[in-house]
Amino acid sequence: MIKEYQIRVEPKVASSEQGILRFLSRSEGLGSDEVKGLRVLKRSIDARQRKIYVNLTVRVFINELPPDDEYVPVDYGQVDDAPQAIVVGAGPGGLFAALRLIELGVRPIVVERGKDVHERRKDIARISREHKVDSESNYSFGEGGAGAFSDGKLFTRSKKRGNWEKILNVMCQHGASTSILTDAHPHIGTDKLPRVIENIRSTIIRCGGEVHFQTRMDAILLSEGKAVGILTNKGERFDGPVILATGHSARDVYRWLWKNGVDIECKGIAMGVRLEHPSKLIDQLQYHSPEGRGQYLPAAEYNMVTQARGRGVYSFCMCPGGFVVPAASSPHQVVVNGMSPSTRNSAWSNSGMVVEIRPEDLGDNSLVSSQTIAAINDRLSVIGHRWDASSPLAMMYLQEELEYTCWLEGGMRQTAPAQRMNDFVEGVASADLPATSYTPGVVPSRIDCWLPPFIGSRLQEGFSTFGRNKKGFLTNEAALIAIETRTSAPVRILRDKERLQHVSIEGLFPCGEGAGYAGGIVSAAVDGERCAEALSEYLKG
Image (cartoon, rainbow, N blue to C red; front, side):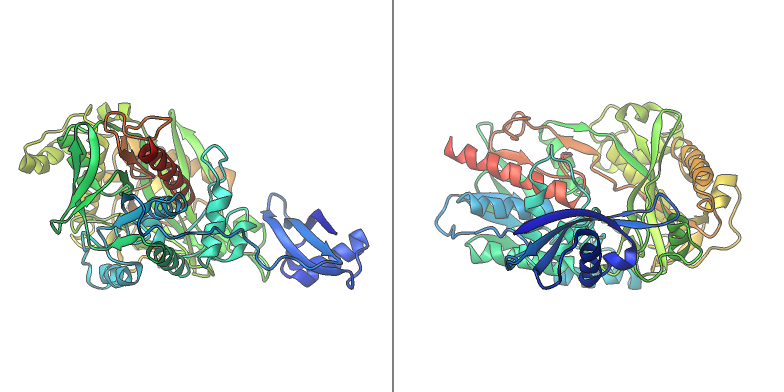
């Protein structure tokens, strides 16, 4: 017999199967000899009150053994002689598109401009050690995409997007901890996710697919209004319909699409800074205790959101017990992101703190001043372009300008401008800076002066609100590290809502976060599966 129970217990009880069984024995009268197994189906922490509880949904196997697998595996067959399709990009959208194509009897050819996930580590380490950014192998480009080395959080729970439960099961099948099936905020960790990615690659190749690294798509081949293949930087041609899953930082792809008349549009994003606190302080605030998390609780998370003059100000990609990392994809940029290892045990906790920006805001002088326009035009003159607020690339140009400004402020290295949190709100210089997890180093900077007022003043208002709502959050123990610009794609590649093909090019399937249809690992993976299904139907039709 199988029974399920929803229980509310103290963290010590929830920390072990024995503790949960003892609780059920007292509350439900279950005997230890009749219970043959226990599975935790859902786990969440309730920290709203001073006394912390853990909410659990548990499945108890009474007088029968539980199944061997805690996840539902997918059977991947051989596709050696099947029709082929091209998948551009080996991030979560591209990898899960390739897996789904195999399920549907289509042979995927995956091309990735960066290196495999193992070799990527070396180039990423060089950013901190030598301040050198490889334009083809960095935190954004390479096997696994931007998510491989920026935390591995799996927050998506929207049923409208698709079968996210299957995505988590496939990750478990390829080596992820089964805890991601139960936790309210599942997290693999940057130390564990690369192995999962390598195992997915092995499945693709074992089934007859191909994966090509250091192979950049330089052009989409078009014939009679259809995408029929791609050309690469190596002069190779790959034929077949195309799933375009290049991620939100492949700006050369956006430029190629615009130049070649492929329909794209400017998309709203959010930009701001990384805010880093001591993790012990966040634990104390969130768990209402001077002792912090104690022995049985994880590093505390938070979610902050408010409105400032009609625009959202909110936390993004919160990384408890994590690190701030250098996420530039070209040498003359400084971009920051956050990540956490699976243990989430660093001395710091960070989050993006960003302001919503809409395409119509690009005409606002407090966001894009005449000086900013002049600076953008100076760099665009090399390719014969000029700033146009109505251009589909306008938001991207603003991203680039702020990242370049940040590079200059940081001393033309990967050193990042930083300012203490309360100093930023008060509009004063920081005489010194707290210790930080950002390994390339930080330099004091008047972020409040050079950040566009449209963003900076709203962040100041937002921080003041957060400080009032959570006493102790607004503090000079925390530091702002600039700049956070890669929250999502600045461009949307237009596609048909039903068939998922580009609105005017058959056989081209814009996919995932880079195309403007996802926001994170799981949602990108779900979109990859949907695009694979649409491509399979296209091949039949």
